[in-house]
Image 1: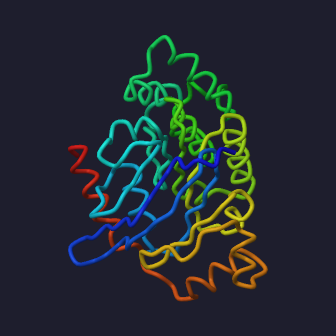
Image 2 (image 1 turned 90 degrees about the horizontal axis):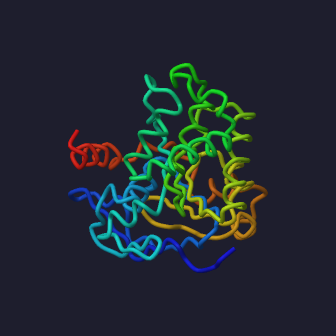
Length: 265
């Protein structure tokens, strides 16, 4: 793995009126790394991801993604693919049509688009279903298609926001096998959030824990377990963030409203 950072965040702040959703956050993600970004509801994960993916502007601080700062939005967007927590496929289109439409949005040349779509659908075991309507797909198949779609423009970073929520254990394992294969075969950097601590412990090289807008710790799962005298990452997470039930992130709804305004919806 290349230890040069592909994501650099320094003193990042995001305020919504008087509410500080992200408070002086700093961390780096190395090129080719699988990096887990963990926190309770309301911790600041969603807001941070929205800033990293140009959906929100920082109030202050520095973001550099693949060598571009936060003002270079087009360059940053061409550097990553993203799978959102909420489904974003068009159920009335086929798998192939969803891929084709996304490729056109990213300006993939027509001569390249067909072989890229075919190879990516093979990668996620959906080539035999390429002409089927997405509304006939299971939840796991839709997630796999979303991953394939996110790769259509050959990004260097893959953002996954709660990618396995609602999936059964078998499908979750298969999905992570696809992701790990991408990371190992293509050197792709993977930045993901999850509430399944065993996933983060098993898949990630390093973990950042954020709570109440601040980074609490960054390290390998083993380092975090050892520093908290815990037998598992989940136990360490609870020691670091507490046991109380949290509300959903206060800024998330505002962030979605801003996203819709940005895209004119």
